[in-house]
Amino acid sequence: MIYHEAGEVAVLVMLTQTVESGKEKCAQYFPQDMENPTFEFSSHSTTEPPAAHFSGSVTLLNTTYDESIRSHVSELELRVGSNTKTVWHFLFAGWSDYGTPEGPDRDALLNLMTATAEKAKSFSNPRIVHCSAGVGRTGTFIALDHLLRQLQSGQLLKEDDNSADAVFNTVNRLREQRMLMVYNAFQYQFIYDVLKEQTQIKLGIQSAPIEPRPQKIAKPDDGMFKPELVALSPADIGSAAEPDDPESENNEVKDVGRSKESKGDKENDDNDKADDDDDDNKDDDGEAEDEDES
Image (tube, rainbow, N blue to C red; front, top):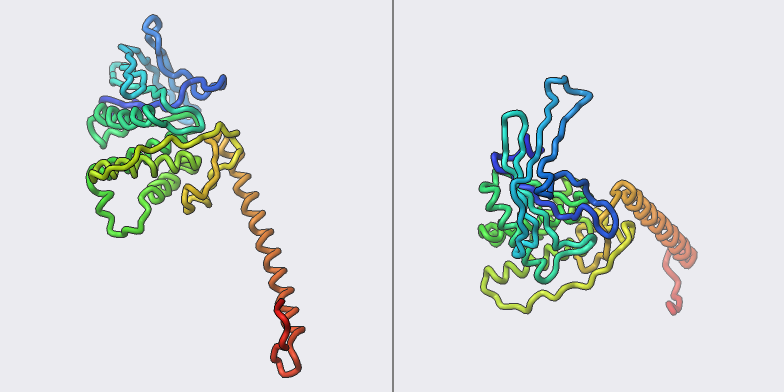
């Protein structure tokens, strides 16, 4: 992807650690050690002719830690045949699994968005962003980065429809391309909080600092932020966790739909019974008899 899709200088943002809470979250696909600075790789396909296969290497040129963006920043050289490409790899250390960046980590994330955009040099050169499942932290980063750029350009404040919810619309557009983007309620609320804070700064409005929201480490199937709930206010949505296996949670959405259908059937039965009772209470002229409503 980096070789084929990125520009001459590629920028890759990694929002997960390779191992979190003792569980592997991402393969070690890049060199980190200057003593062993080169990874060799090859591409094979069962559908493409051998001529389409290629091999290459990734070499670590240097690496540093930048506290202002809480990231390990590595300069890599991607080589395929005689062609080379510079890759800037940013490994963000301020985003815990199932949570959101708070306090200094929040500021570092905003700095990271700016730093990576500057490295890419042009918005026509897309940055590549990933986490573990590729929907929670990744979706939150992409949505917030897009909205903040619209805010800085003034486009966000020029919306013709004042009732339009830019966060809702942005997340919905992302979900049209990849389901479950911005996975849980914490992440959804995080976008609102940061966007509100940055809007007040841009307009010169003083406000109290945003207090970190209480968070819990939830099980992967605990209160999944289901697509049908996207139109609700984030304050109305229960806590949730980023999925390890989104497919298994999709069954949960279907179960919710069935439970709603069952509830609707029960309500219809109750209404039918009430209609029958009303018919019994009418006299021969079709007029309802006077009854004590109590």
